[in-house]
Length: 178
Image (cartoon, helix red, strand yellow):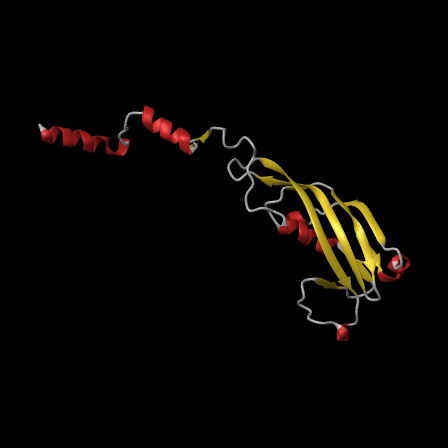
């Protein structure tokens, strides 16, 4: 979403309502865990003063992320409420440039896309799990996935097995005891 500062002057009195859907596919390049981004619905209201715009935004959509257990796709809903301030005050009058609460605009165009992308990236969890991943039994060539309960049950039911690499040693020990 981009607006020229001159274009926004007509909303100075009553504010500017926002109700749009945008595609933020660039977040997939910034975070490799994100497999897909649904269109993001952005709603809110922007108010204006002489040299800044304050936007109260709500972003909703869906990210597709990998399950931490099965590596299958998991749809993760996003619902973000944020207040973002954009300022086009002259550089000489700006306060601390490192202030994270204010996004300073250089030029005559306000581009909210990088800010919206950052809000999405902050919402990505470290791990997601598919609903039925705990109940599923997974296995492959030379490995199996079991829950702790399944492992305890298996140990109770199975006889102790001798490691095939140590089977000859067990036979040797049995011969020396005689």
